[in-house]
Length: 163
Image (cartoon, rainbow, N blue to C red; front, side, top):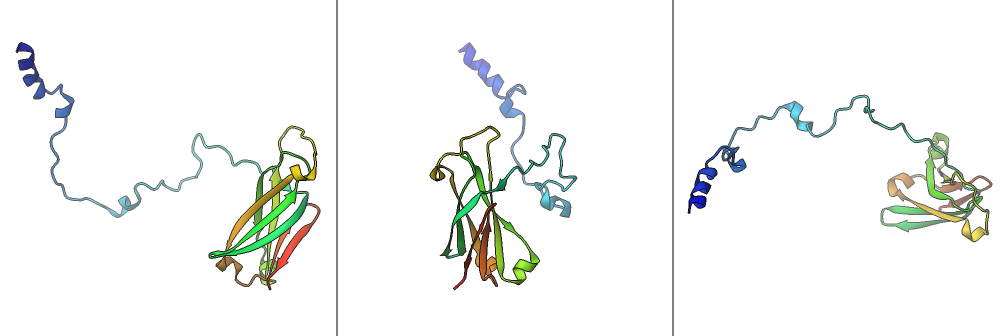
């Protein structure tokens, strides 16, 4: 009984963490125009104290572009390219859009097919083990006025015309 009676005094004690704050009460909202984007970081120099430098682009064009397919979908088209790398171990395949005002005026959309290779030596191996595929989705808006899509590799380029 003596132990239980001590609990009663603990309930109202300031040492009890549940008593550190009172109950909530309504308060008027104080919002200023500056607080509208309070959670969005400010646009300073863009580089923090521990920010890493932008990674160096070590990609190279794929050796040979072997196949180009364009498949229509509800949002536009998917450009699918397959290529053969110079040696095994190619990774991070990317179809990179190359923006050119002259190509746009002539109705050409051009992509560079680029890959990365490991820093260590790898075997060349048979062609089927060096095959790499990548795809990119192109919207209807981006396809407006485009009559030809070209994918460029190191040794060749493939293109597909609209019918």
